[in-house]
Length: 563
RNA sequence: GCACCUAUAGCUCAGCAGGAUAGAGCGACGGUUUCCUAAACCGCAGGCCGGGGGUUCGAAUCCCUCUAGGUGCACCA
Image 1 (cartoon, rainbow, N blue to C red):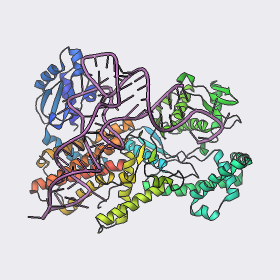
Image 2 (tube, chains in turn purple, green):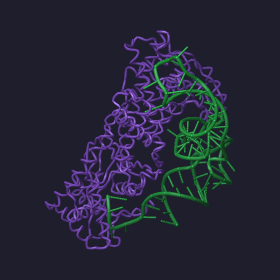
Image 3 (cartoon, rainbow, N blue to C red):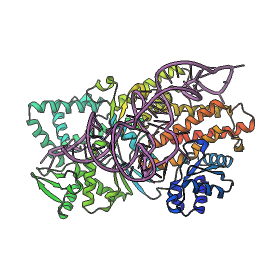
Image 4 (cartoon, rainbow, N blue to C red):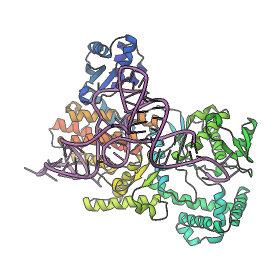
């Protein structure tokens, strides 16, 4: 039973507003003593030509107490509803226990395909913290969409094509250390790539050589293609370790090379629609009507460019997946690029261009100079992951040296702390990364929430067999009610996260639940309570654990059983 | 120069399809352990919501303008 919906029905029966509209208008009062749901009467005031206070007051007299609502009060233009606590608690806790990990899920996205493009790393280049943030964010979004019933398609749009591969092959021929390539492929490839740029400054002929190699690659020269494939395989092998650590998998790795033979058609379409224009020898699409710079389709030498590939990719995806939404999780620095792509698709007559959405995010910045200076200006994702786990291990040795399976716990908690710091805020904000904050396990943090779960699990283990027949009406304190209310609002947080493409909404809500449980835990006995109360509280503990585990899972954070 | 993003407590941030007394966490200070994991809990302090205009019964929230910071603006991706 959805109490909010039931209350909306009551209101809708009393005033001349549609049910859906009432649902939208209903708010949660800022103070708990004001009630559980509030209906603002300000909009009604205009139509009814009465003061909001008067309307609220009149309505309050018409609301009858029943199993849903205990009473309704008029306060300053708001009609505040107090739910029937006993019923509310019973329904909500029971629903969590029945649905388990499915709690909070919905069928909002039934039969809708949603593409989430994220991670999209460049082959032969380091997987740095920026990619880590992107991957963590994209993966969280995908999980949240999936929980809301959408069919999601995870695409890793690999940067595996372009002139840099010509450079890489040229560099390989000159300076490769085969042994290093097998040991640490990315480091070695990156080393020769950087060396290429250094050498090319002195000897511009190298650039020509690189172009020639890329041309060979495009012509599918067997030797060059084999090298390219090897670079790709080695890179993916190394990246897979990071994806493993993050528990991330993809449905498709169709990257730029995949579209190398699908661009002629796009150029042809643009030409037919007379959208292609000459500009200094290059072919562009003018986007002045959108007040943005033109987009380049073909370079002076007739070669394609990444914009051309992105257009081809979007069209391919529509044909292949018939997406409801095509989500690009890519750094905010590329917002102009996507604006150009989507505008161009619109000009081409694809009405689905409105279903393409760029989900931008901020940069990762380091306040600690130590990490950022270690190897040039790139901070490797793997280094950060290892560091997080190692430092967590130190903390465990310090706080709980007798813990079993320390390694597993260190991994879950360290990763939890890391993911939490990336996902706790609005994604557009830059992540200012400091180890001090990332590994501060107090308060608002991944480990704080995990710890709450662990405490609950510990109690349940001690309790042994738990009777499912507990009478939940023994959950009668204010703390318990506030806690259950948060459980009930879990699905609202998921819905909001979906609408806003913001995982932080979920993570914050789960943190609120953890706070409420800790408060409850500290002020009320569970195992030592009188039997009826104990059984009810154990059920509540179970329900809280379920929601925390599900909520953390939605953003990719695992829950240890001990810590 | 143009476009986009950001500006709220000492720090990091919520709140912004206008609405009730602007909220958290960290840090600071002071408490809680014969009791289920103190990685916890409780209390206290801390604010011209970047400045200035406007719209409104009502603005942190919407509009204009200014300031400061960030990002981007064709032959890389």
